[in-house]
Amino acid sequence: MDKTLLANIIWAAACFILSVVAQFIRAYLKAKGEITEEAAHQIAVAEEVYSTVEKAGERKKNLCIDALYDMIPAPVKMFFTREMIGEIVQKVFDQVEKYKDVWIQAAAEELVGKLPDLNENAEAEHAE
Image (cartoon, rainbow, N blue to C red; front, top):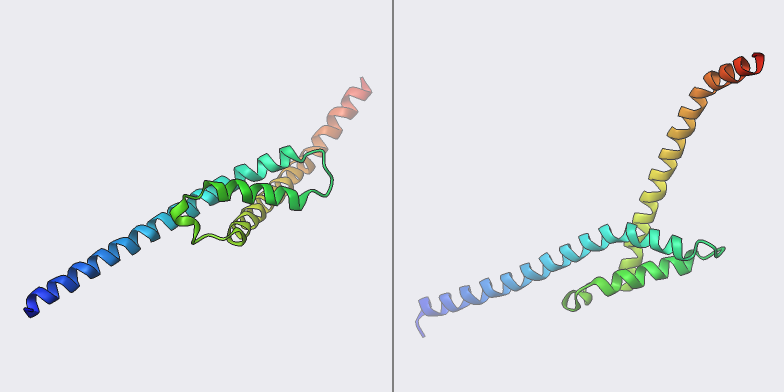
């Protein structure tokens, strides 16, 4: 067999393998991005579904994980475990909680800043 032909065959096989690997990486990253985006929505859905149930944290999390795991295309599922989906859900939940805490703090500070004005208005109305 000619060395040039062998080199061409090896090169073609390497390109094919790299192409397949690149497609799997692309599909993995796309799925992870979609899961991360959808996680916040699924957290909101779980909060609504279990809004009247006390201490339903684990049920809420499992509802989110199940919904997100069902979104993953079959060829990519072998790269995602339920535990990985659970970690993504937890990270998104932590970010939502962090944002909520910042928002509540800012709203509280704004309200405290308005208290003197509210007291003055109440005193003026009471004096009349």
